[in-house]
View 1 (cartoon, rainbow, N blue to C red):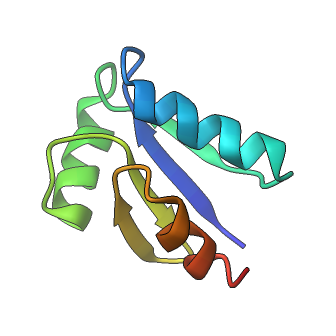
View 2: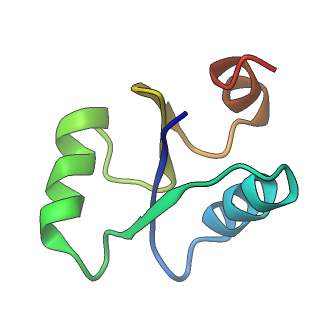
Length: 76
């Protein structure tokens, strides 16, 4: 399983997403798009969105912290 999380340090929903993954024992890769313009461009290209969090679960893009969509993508 591959989970990528595009975040910024001040994003409350990003913290919720990280907490959710940690509490459920799901490994993820985090990219701070405020500090990494390359990852910000990648996020925009993949999601069409400028806002965070953007979550990629096995290639499925989820914009925002939508727990039910995340669970569906994780096949829970």
